[in-house]
View 1 (cartoon, rainbow, N blue to C red):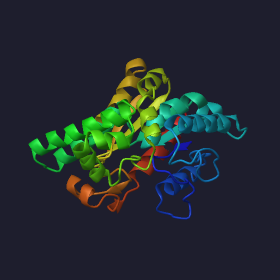
View 2: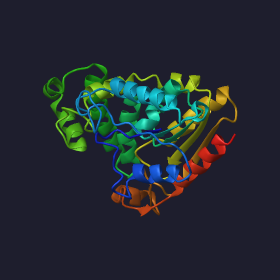
View 3: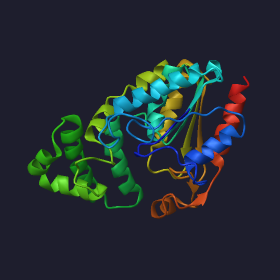
View 4: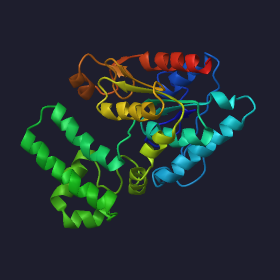
Length: 289
């Protein structure tokens, strides 16, 4: 079962041969795997609150229900059920895997740290690795901390935050290209619920195998989060988890010669099959155990 990333939109992108879901689907089915994907609530064929307005919890629950339905299919061996989580899907993967009692998980570009911590850190980290002035970064991080704390943690309305801290609101809004009525094309309800997701607890309870993959030049996600998931699994089940880096890859499976290139040409690097090939090879080995 493939869990998609955070953007709203249907996963039915098979008419585009370069679409990552289409490429992964083709690579898996070519080797005889049964593959399932579920649209987010309110997207594609799925019913429910429109994705842009919906929350994280209902999305995770929907994917969990889809996993239970998938493993109940008579054509599927429930003992050889695997989850592939991409980006936000990687964060959701241990919770969804628990619903289907998955034998293994593959993650890419995900998060293990609390969602608030990830959001606060990632924008500052991008500034650091692009060589911006340290004093400017410190001030910038302060604006992000004030806004995120007020809206995401304290649950304050963005309009009230704009009135209370207009300078910080303006800087953060300019960074994300909006007026903060939502963030990353998802509701603040989504982000608040994602921050409460029991990700670490779910990894602690996961008894299966894990292949944690990270792109060398993926500046959207944190390398240490991928190591963290593998460390959690291996602490309870030594040898069950692998952490590997895909050379040159950005967040969306294109390859660059340098980190700077991945900023300037995000998603426009050389198409790379490393993730697909490694995922299929690992699944073949695991399914034959």
